Image (tube, rainbow, N blue to C red; front, side, top):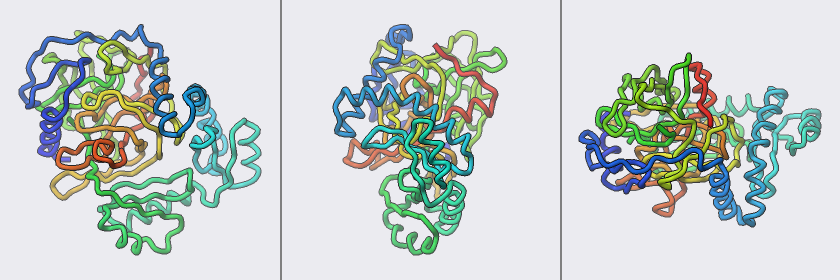
Length: 403
């Protein structure tokens, strides 16, 4: 994405969005950020994740049409389900074909390609589903479909629920692309009218500033004993120096974008990175107790400087997205997780959580209309993408800060 379009996003978000009391107020121009009276910082010690679990439960109850009591039980089970899914998929290897949490029952479902593997899954306490297409076959079909459809593809991913590849393209191209991918196995072509862009615009989720732009901090971490923090790669592109409230936070040490979308920055000694994420209620922060890679169907929430604390669920994993750069070119990023959570410009780099476990940092999402607002504001679906945190800490040898 070009710097010009990032500036446009940042200025639009600053004009159109009322920032919550959890961070300082922003004037319209990101390049002229002024020092404001600071509002109270969140107190990590006041929240052990219970309020976050409650928020997730309320969202889940509304979305699934279930009782709040049942929703609470499902949210409480999610961390264990994530561990089980990871363990089973690792042990089964090529015989596994993805996993998800069933929307109706709340049970963990692990896809397999043979009966023997199904018995292994059931013995572990999960639900087994024997499917037609292996992960390798879906990956091959996805690669072929993207090649045939060209750069106009908005996103693609293997959907474990349907055991198909979902290829999203501009609505006007649906019929054309369906014809182009005819003959490929397991391809579902969907249309969208949204414009998908990266969302450029100390606790996780709070605003960070650089060169007239704004993004959000993802998670605090350490590397070799030194304080660092992670954010989106397109925020750190060009080795940016980050500031907060007029004071230097640190300087980008490494970034990856496009291809991936992650970066890490030093954190100056004048700041203390806390292992918690801003809940945007002006008081509380959510503890970070570790990280995981939650299955499809998991209720998740995100923290970011523009839309604050919003919730949804994991819809797809290993999604490949073509972000529009605004000049007719695209930046392709793979390995993303898709969610139906509200995000907007400036939320990039922000924190994603499932209960108290870190999931990733905001990469981008679908924006509707001239102000690129999230879908729920205009009666359309929310579409957001985050870069899984496990890949980031592994790539840079980081240790996530916890509390």
